[in-house]
Length: 81
Image (cartoon, rainbow, N blue to C red; front, side, top):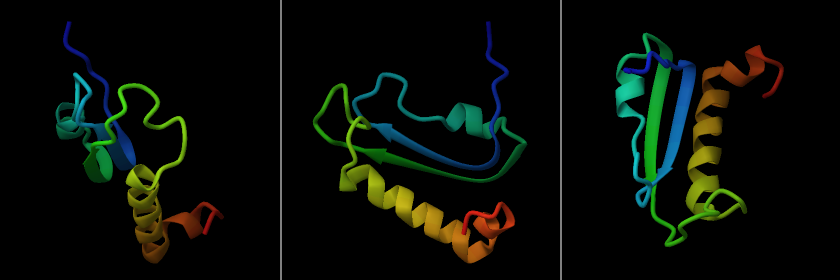
């Protein structure tokens, strides 16, 4: 059965290069409601637990992405910036 899952809004996808599934490209391609998308692959050497603790490998891309939203006024629109 083919999935009909789609993303909407502004989407940041962080994934480990060691993941079996890896990218969200397929879902992003059919996500007509996604206003902007960014996908970043990271390599940590950890199998499980990559996102359990904050590390610069995923925190910095997240921070940069959030900062870009702040510059665009996106976060202010939701009272977050």
